[in-house]
Image (cartoon, rainbow, N blue to C red; front, side):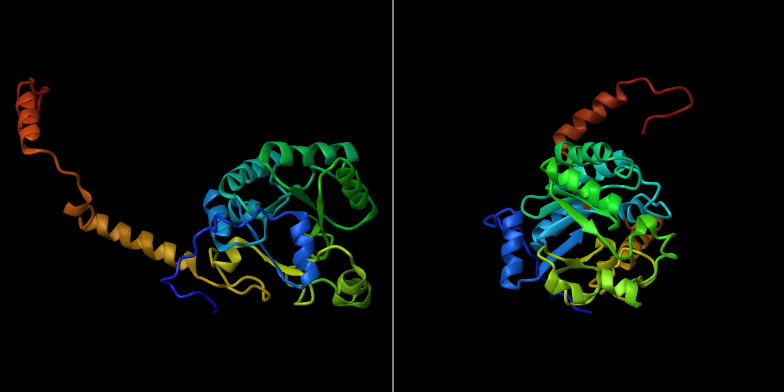
Length: 283
């Protein structure tokens, strides 16, 4: 497991310029891999900011990692906008992308544009992401771009339509799948391509916040590199806290606040001047 020494903290670089589309294009031109991560709230956004990532995605995966849904399908537009607003408050420099949830863009170009505009106006997103690569989704992407909002596509394993793909399974393992998504396409593409479980040939990589930090049960997909085990650390911390409370080790004297002796004496005098309630005696 690769990680930085535990005593090192990485502060946010106040001199770092906000990441823009031209900066992303320049990084790709120079062959500098793009670093992308998901975030779903203020603390995860602050961590991404401090680590200096290039792109932050407020993914519909938050439906499962944060909101506890069994899949990404049930999450509503308003729920994702709430998460996106929290992320925006924690970000200064990464390029922020909002994920359009299932059912919020498929009906028409107008619906897609209105949804995308909400992510930009209400949550401060720099771009939006939508899934699939069929004619309908291409039309929606074109309409959103023509409305002045950048679009990130998502092909391969698309969770919103995972049932049609046979579940959460690796894609592009046969000729027809490879023709659509494999590394052979990279030299033919003019846009930056970011992969997740798609190998090292892409222009960058993205991982889910909770996967790479181990805030989940189980090991997850084979392509995930876990850089921490925060789920275990959280359980350990809460278990220790619970034991300290039950054994009266917490709070200790150092966790309490003191009061001037004169003020305490005056308080006691005032307290004893009051009549005790029925059935109780004063100390």
